[in-house]
Length: 462
Image 1: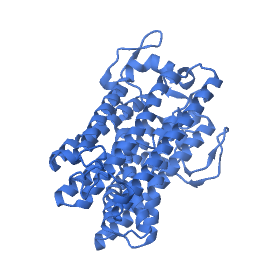
Image 2: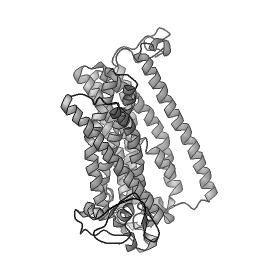
Image 3: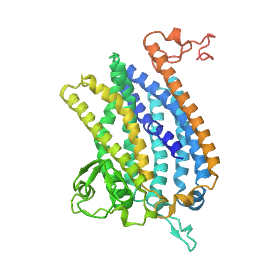
Image 4: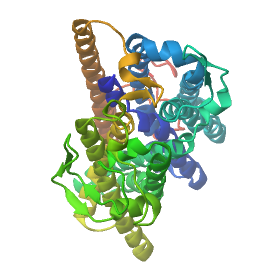
């Protein structure tokens, strides 16, 4: 499950945020009569469709794994928090229909009609994120039920089960995070082109729009990250202790950047900053921070799990801080000269920012899941009670099959993207006819279809 989620989550920023960035470029193209912007939007929509197809495969595997690997959790708690998965499924089908209409409409609908029909796409993506984050936030702060004498949930209140204390902080942190991740990844592609000497308007616009979106949201995300950490401090104090490797409950608690927690409570390595953890948690060095030793060993993460969660959290914070500096660099140059920074180092950093953001997405998931151990449903069900009793040899076989499937799927994904990129580059160089007969891109996204090889206007060659 860790491998599957860790792979699938790399696609999530594009599934949730790429439609919004594409439509923003689409709107700019229509508003300003900008053929370059329309061309970028059309090409991004093709990438969006390929990514969605890959997400179908990885998401389907996840849905099977929920039933196969976690029968204890789904059997007992499915009636309480399962609505979130239902919402995600409806959003998934709606998004599939909307993507099909959007792709179909480039050649067949009036420009503004086409745009308005595509506008619900980001809303469907956000609805899907709503369902998944609602389920995860419930696992972190379960609400909306009572337990009978046998420990089974009864009297389910669906509204309280969805809107749990951690839902708001998790949802907005997630949404802003995936939008800026998609923005940095898309901009990074054009930053590489810029470094290779492609200084045309196509690359400039392809870089500027998604990077501007990401740069604006970066400081917002930093504040939301601080807010969710404080929510964890109040709602899940033991999880907070794990992410900050705090062993004893105390005030004036120091902050450790990295470092390793040992089973006896000692910490080796890292950078120690006196009193900072208490200040960050409650704005005062007198703030009392709950330590891991405040609960029995069976109710808290192990020293190794706490260290993993702590490192994931610190990597996320470190990258976030560097991205704030990058966004400020960009903003300063833009405000002063209304132009991009001239230094190649800026574009080198921008090219790396997308990969760094994907790493933070992974780290955020690791922090959320590993920091909650040993609970699958916080303080209500342990992982050991939720997992399947299938033999280990069978699980290893299943893992091997999933790894092979994902290698093939992601390999196909990258192959398709590289071929699309090469085809577009040749088209921009004026070699489209020789390189790709039957190309349907034409001179503009709303232009007529070229004649097919059979001579028909909408024949098989199109």
